[in-house]
Amino acid sequence: MITTIKNNSLVDFENELCTILNTHSNEIEKAKKIISFIEETLKQISSWLKNHVFDSIQDEIIFFKEIKPNIVAKLIFYKEVLILIATQPIDKNKKVKYFEKRLNAINQFHRKNREFIKYIKSQSTHFDELYFTRKKYKDLFLNDCVVINQDAKLSTSHDYLLAEVIAYELLAIYIENCIDNLNKSCAIANTNFNSNLHWTAKKIDLIELIYALHQAKVFDNGQADIKEITHVLEKAFQIDLGDNITRSFIDIKNRKTEPTRFLNQLQAELENKIEKDSY
Image (cartoon, rainbow, N blue to C red; front, side, top):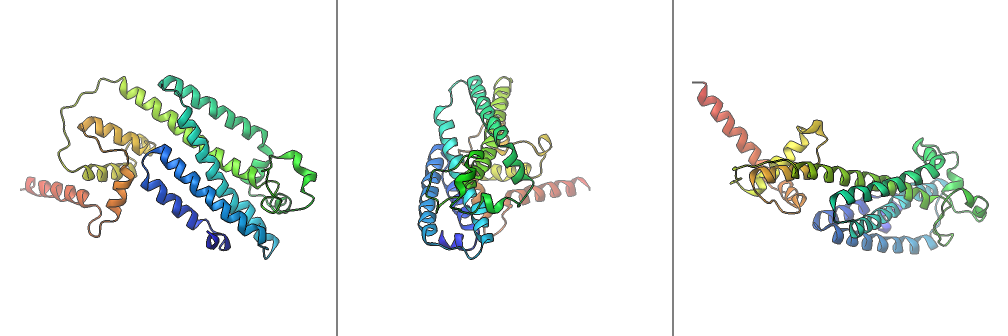
């Protein structure tokens, strides 16, 4: 983690997050694991900050405007996700209302902090030294933002507020996807759909096909979620692909030869059919 800080980069942090995301299929366990990882990361950052002297004001601004807020934002986001999962109603219709209520709260946060959000979105820099460096006189302008309750050596007046902005944008997208998936699943459940087709090839072959169809954006002009595509094809072909097709996709990517083995086979079979029918 110290290497990450010194390089002003989030690469190592994001790579570790991806590893956790790809190795835990249960959302609750995934969120808990990520929260634990980020909290440990922040402990390391705190120890480092107490003794670190930035080479320049610009380096300090970069850290408190770009690096720390993005790490803290993930912590806020996954804690919110954990609460959402743990407290959501069982009834689907009540779930939608529950998620919509949380979206309204996020919108209120954005309205309350619209001037600061405008500053960030417009990529302005004229207040950066005021907002994203540690100053002894920062209590003079505390009234215009939410400030993390930490040692002055570990925070600036606005880095936590920026983390909240980033986190709530991620949370809004997450909630909107939850609402969309609930609405789609209700629509599917209310549709009489019966199929006698059974997928008799390997499960990994269907997953390869699903990712190809999703990447090609052949459903809903590319707006269809891969989970929804998976659900529909599972229902159509009467097969259970399991909870974590992402793990299977990683296995596909890691193939030493022919990553698109099934798609290549399909192409060869179709070309063979076309060739035979041409005579």
